[in-house]
Image (cartoon, rainbow, N blue to C red; front, side, top):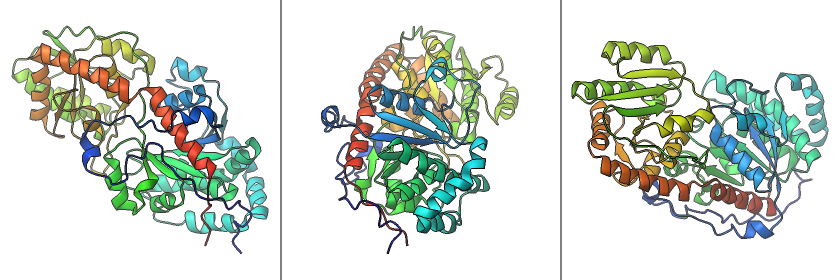
Length: 459
């Protein structure tokens, strides 16, 4: 008899909210998404489940989109219990992050002494699942040593999370990022017989980890916030289209003011992000060198920090653009609106890194558009789903300094066009990426999943 025989054998729920992908046409990679609000009214009258949100860190300064999502779900009445693999982060937190008062339970080093008791607890109740976790989940071909190490910690902390879910009356488990956090949610789901889901975004699925296909097979649903991810996930995992739900991540802030858009020399250009390969900031510096050669009067603020900071500054010196490019360093999320309001053109030069890592839909591009800033972006991953070329912004090929320079120049030389695209972009993101809309779609999925669930059996 299966070790899961004690689980309630309920019928699987019919997951219908935000079901964009019955047939997965190419349409979703490029056309404007339409609101899918079929179950929004239902969530107002149906009792909402209590959801455990499994994360690696919370709150994390660079993950404002996750913080905003959890905060909005909590504000809309969803009972959210945050569980994190690691302890708290204290640097670079925004005021809103410091003020968050929802329940957060952190594992980390302080949880290690109690883990033997947690494992023993489940060994008595679900010995087959414990064996499965250590023999099947742990030993597989993970992407990197770091991924393998996080998977090991995730399995250990899953025993703690599972107990906390039972004690707190959790009805659904959701993880953000398809790697360590989802591994923990997957094991906790097997232990508790609760449904689980997870969000796959960018670096966590490109390339996939050693268990992504199995996680997809066992979950109630997998949410992605980039439409162009869906065909890739179908090819990679062989999962059913009905299991994949496109629910965009929302804007992370509401604009309190708008960009002045002077749009006259010297033009004020802005780029924000981590200094890593996938951001393509080296290409932007080369585009700046071309713009300088063409005589465009401009100043670029390249805001951020990261492992490539020294390399980028050296490149700026080599290209002799230090007179038109500044590196203000890391800027807290609360200060971003001030930068956007003093900008003429926002540039997002994302690219696919050599290891396959890439952006999804960077929040900062939605924030720029919400503040009425014209944008130039590269045609990578989900950027084309928000930057509709010559409608809500300018879209150019990746890794092409000449095309990027021309895209920037096209907006600087046509202020009326730039303002029109900025207005279209603002209207688009305010409709499609409103926090309330995105949160309601997630709530509908959680509610549907909690109604009926058949736990996959352990071999």
